[in-house]
Image 1 (cartoon, rainbow, N blue to C red):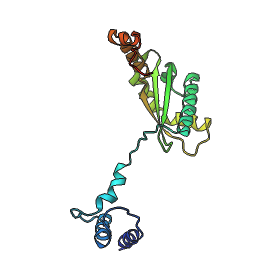
Image 2 (cartoon, rainbow, N blue to C red):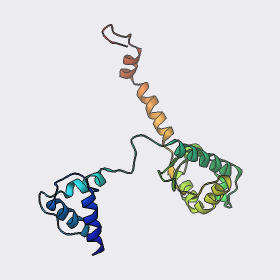
Image 3 (tube, helix red, strand yellow):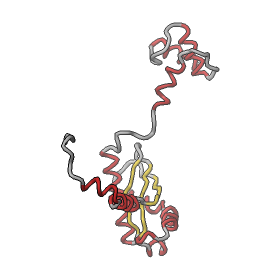
Image 4 (cartoon, helix red, strand yellow):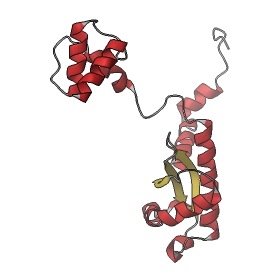
Length: 189
């Protein structure tokens, strides 16, 4: 009963924007909120549409805060791993490069891109890091002031592979011919 009153008040105030006006819109939107089956041609799509268009990734890229927090976490993890502060001899034996830390929009999840020196046994290094996630989070919390210490998710760093692929493409004969060719007169620079 409470849901029906909320739906009626919202529809009367125009919170559900778009669609038909009057009694048909109110009943269709009330049915949508209360979970009843939609009626063909009703204004439910105007209500559901904006929610469905929202995505979890932004086309704008990360915010300055995400970049700052990610870089700070990267530095702290690099220092902890290079000093051998983790209480595991197997992990301290490895030389691990922390290439990048990507933060989620709410700063609660940090995706840490790592690569052991030489690129050997990447999966084993990621498994060791994941096993000691709690201790690494503790070191992160000591090194920075943040309301919620993010969950650390470890992934293979592919930037070196992308660099090799870019070099391979630039060394291709067809690409080199296009790069070395003199500019044509009809090109506007």
